[in-house]
Image (cartoon, rainbow over all chains, first blue to last red; front, side, top):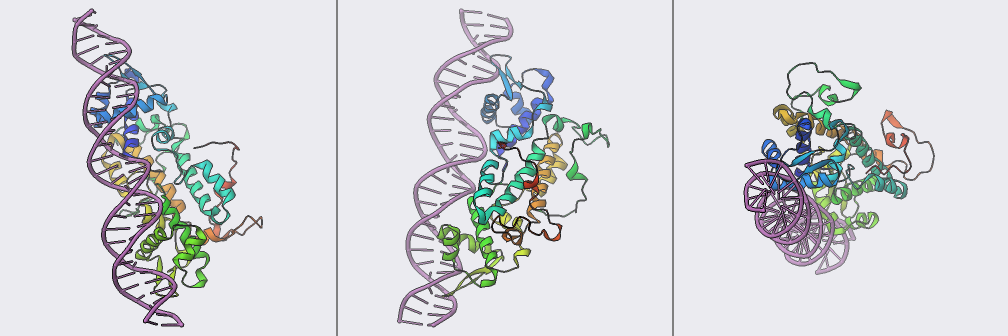
Length: 166
Length: 166
DNA sequence: ATAAAGTCTATTGGTTCAGTCGAGTTTATG
DNA sequence: CATAAACTCGACTGAACCAATAGACTTTAT
């Protein structure tokens, strides 16, 4: 799964709307300005998010966009699937399961692909916009971890300084 | 990370060479025929794999390609990085670490991206061609799991029949 | 010599990506 | 009720990338 520039913009816009969830409709222009996104392109993205019923629009003067659900009810996987397609690194999960069943010489390979997609899904289907908008800055060393959610797992692991892993 | 058709071809070709690792150089034509890959395109891919020192070529009549290392020493991540780039779903690991350090409003988002790439890396950097070429068919219900390697983890999990997960 | 094989550069047709334009519709407000 | 602010929607574009092909060239076994 590759996240495109458009996908990143969508995620940024949704984070911004989540941060201002209490403030009613936010103008496209304000989102574009604050997140530094191309306005016309953002317009297109918000339209898609609206058709997918993740946000709603208010038309006319004083209009704008707002989330249709609580930030804690919007998972990153939804947004990414909408804009960039399936989470699997090749094809989609259903297709991979078929290939694992039919293509004997390559089934082990497709099983690895499916394992990778499952690992990504486990993360992205459990992380919500609400998870992303707490602790805006690095202040306050210990922030309370609510409900045993994962998060920060990667950053706790010992990290070699010049790892150059990619 | 998205695996392209070209990336899949590369993985298939490498699996085929791993299966015949004992047989010396294999002709491009034979690989193309047996794996059903476009011959001229495969030629290009093998050249790249050669420049990356994963395979070596023998020129002239009786020539062909063969692995340069044992199948158990060739990790899927190497092949995928060569053909399709970094494992991260956006940018690469180094870049993400910089963004996590600098882009405070979005650091949580980039951390999730990094978690996804780490999850993929854990799988793809530990799976080798040797892992893929054992048990060609579904025969022999129990195959010996060597050295506590993961594998098959996904397929053991309870799977809802009509999951439609992507 | 020559046929069989890999090497290498160029090119092509198609698709996706990132983004722009502009005409249209809706609505708050004076 | 005029109008400006805002969303809606379809068309379009240039660049990059993808999958694949073509063809000339070099190397080597026999």
